[in-house]
Amino acid sequence: MANIMKALTEGTDASGGFVVPEELSRSILEFIQAKAVTIDDLQTVPMGSDELRLPSLTAGSTVRVGVGENAAITGADLGMGRTTMSAVKFAALMTASTELLEDAPQSVATIVSEQFGKDLALSIDNQILGTTTANFAGALGFTGNANNTLSSSSLSWQELVSASHLVLADDQPSPDVMYSHPNNVRTFKLLTDGNARPIFDEALYGSPLLRNGVIGTLLGMEIKPTTQLTTSSLIMGVKKQFGYYATRRNIRFNRFYNIATDDWVFQANTRVAFAIKHNNAYALIHSIA
Image 1 (tube, rainbow, N blue to C red):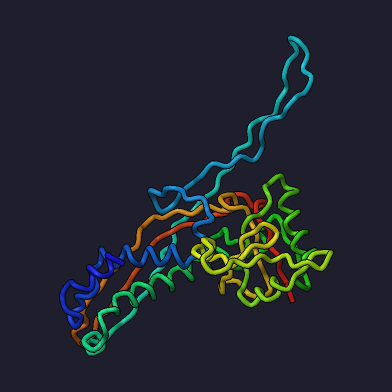
Image 2 (cartoon, helix red, strand yellow; image 1 turned 120 degrees about the horizontal axis):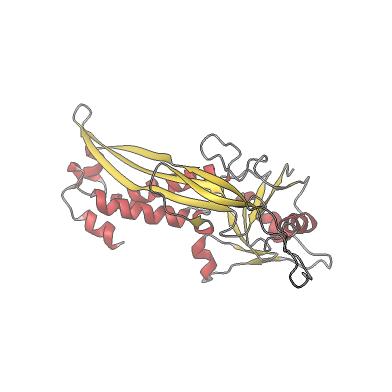
């Protein structure tokens, strides 16, 4: 907030002075981090070029038990693969007339940075969670990427347990986060176990979970509502294990005056990358009626 208030004192609104690029860039990044539900759950890696190749293990060692004295220890060849991450540009643009800037309260700087942050955060979440691989080849919601998938006609305690056990069966820890459309929250709140006991633990006012976009827990998983998934699918995973996230270009905020129309154009952009780390560290439930 201190950065925003400083930006508000720089120049006059009509001349676009309420937005100082360096200050607003930091503010937009803060809003992205606050609004995006996925980024905090991913393993962050440094990215020094537009493409990053990370090594991955495809075959490990073979353990021999009861090896005799002076006996040869046989093993397996180390299998190595790689995960490739490609930077994708996300950009948002808006225009404001000089009249609007003249008549608007000084809080317009907060509005601009918050809107850019929200729009970019939703777009990044959409590409990470979505069903298309057009930008991020490792989209979690794409059925061809998930090692663990479950088609369910309805959300039930049994289905959630089954999906969680798909991850456990692949020698991964129990899932600790779930992404789902807000319209599914009511169903979560009504779920009961075999003894008719509610299994949803709602985060109440003052809970630190609320600051991270979590509305409650279910089977040990933090529930994060997002409109970037449809009501017919949800994703549960193990934090820091199911995905990589990298930033190639930090937020850049730009502005210019359009003399022909007497308005200001504001633009914010960033370049980030995402890839699936372990496709058995998450489960996708789809086709929910």
